[in-house]
Length: 136
Image (tube, rainbow, N blue to C red):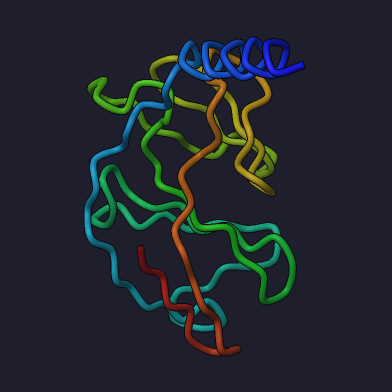
C-alpha cells in the first residue's frame, strides 16, 4: 500500500511539473478613481478604456448595475509581444487581441477562441454607488 501511495504521489508531482506556466504581465501600480454614473459614464453592458493606466491600458466593463469587470488590456497569451492589446468587438460582449487574435468574454474574462488558454488579468475594485476605485 505504501509503494502504491508513493508511486501515485510521484505521478502527480511529475504531472504538475509539466504544466505550462502562464506568462507574467509586467506589474504596473494602478490606483484610479472614476465616476461611472456621471463624468466617466459607463452604461450597463458598456465599457470604457483608460489608456494611460496599467501595462497596456485598462478596460472597465459594467456587467450589471453596480457590478464591474476591470481588465488589463494586455493579452495574457504573449504579454511581451509588441502591440498585443485587447479591444472590444462590435456587439460589446467580447474582446479580441490585435496580435494573436484570441477572443475573450467580457462577463468573466475567459478565452473562447484563439491560442490563449489564459483569462484576462483582472484588477481589484470597490464601488460605493458613486465612485469606482480601481487598484492592484
